[in-house]
Amino acid sequence: MEVHFKPETESRLNELASKSGRAPDELVEDALAGYLEEVASMREMLDSRYDDIKSGRVEPVDGETFFEGLRRREDELLKRRSSQ
Image 1 (tube, rainbow, N blue to C red):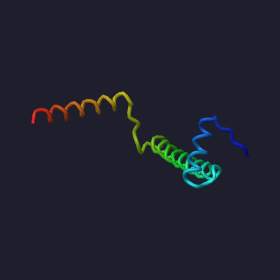
Image 2 (image 1 turned 30 degrees about the vertical axis):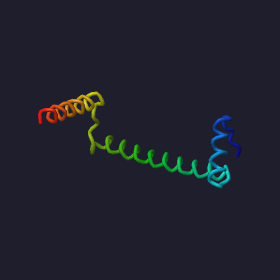
Image 3 (image 1 turned 180 degrees about the vertical axis):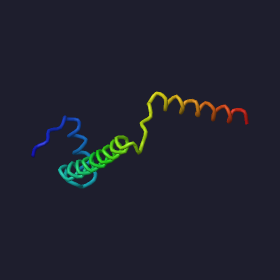
């Protein structure tokens, strides 16, 4: 498999390889392996949360309502701190 990078990305990769004493292809392999593991983990978590919502174990929360409550609690906390 071949991977093509923008010149500035390739330059940064080569610089890091030189500083670390590792081959650029090893760095790319490690980075991609880590990324794929993270994506798989995120996919698993999202699937699990979707299953929880679909089964009724978890109730979805409206985003705007959630952030309104969060802002309100933050305002209350700041008021309490300023009055002390």
